[in-house]
Every structure is written in C-alpha cells, then in structure tokens.
Image 1 (spheres, rainbow, N blue to C red):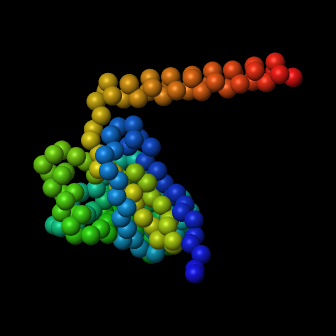
Image 2 (cartoon, rainbow, N blue to C red; image 1 turned 90 degrees about the horizontal axis):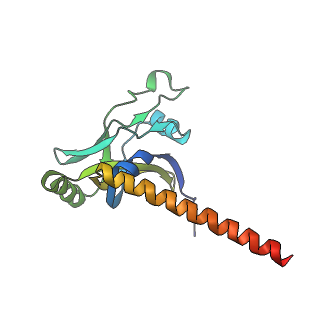
Amino acid sequence: MPQRKPERSIAQNRKARHDYFVDETFECGLALHGTEVKSLRAGKANLRESYASVTGGEMIVRGMHISPYEQGNRFNTDPLREKKLLMHKAEIRRLGGLVQRQGFALVPLEIVLRNGRMKLILGLCRGKKLYDKRDDLAKRDADRDIERAMRAQGKRSRDRDD
C-alpha cells in the first residue's frame, strides 16, 4: 500500500474569514501551468483579492496572484491570469445557482498541496456586517482573557503545592 504524503498549506486567505461567514467549503483542482506549480511549491501566492465565478458552465478564479517563477524565464505566465477550477458539473451548476439567486459569494480560502496536486479550498460565503465583525473581535478578546486567567490560576495552584 503506497504511503500518502502529508497535506501542506501553501497560501491562506485570512481576511476572508474576517469578512465573510463561511457556510460550506469545497475542494477543487486548479488548472495550472508548470512554472505556476513551481512557484506555488515555493509558497509565492496571494489570495487576498481573489474570488470565483461561474461563466459558461466553468468555474473560474480571478484575482489570485501567483508570482512568476524565478528560473522560469519565457515560460512564465501572467501572475493574475484567470485560472480554471476543476469540479464536477453538478457542483458547478449548484454553486452558480446559489451565487446568482441567494447572494452568496465564492471565495478562495486556502491552497493546499495534497498527494502531489494543488487543490483550492473554496468557500460558499455570506458577507458580514460591521457589527458582526465587532462581535467576533469582542468574542476573541474575551476568550483570550479567559485563557490567560486560567493559565495564571493554574500557575498559582502549582506554586502553593510546592
């Protein structure tokens, strides 16, 4: 039985989780050129302003920046070129309908290297309002304070035992 290689994260879109509620995630393949794969393996990608859309029955990701490969010379492609996403036709139709009718957005969340292939984790997202973002920040701060207090309490009880 062949041994599986571990999954490795190449790039993440951290701002997406701050700006959107992620309802569902999908894993899809990326149609890339050779120098783009080499550049991704080096970790030179940016997902910050990217989004996906359905056009002509195909899923396309736009705004994803893959830096040119340093040793790629004339084989390098445009860093911001549109890349085709590889998904089942039924999934593409379903996501296209949700985006069109219900106001969802398709946002790339992460690029991972899984079993030697580049995969894009795509999120079906709804936009957050400003008050939602504030609530998330307040909750994160409160959790951090609680964790800090628990650690401090644990240290005090160990000091007494000694």
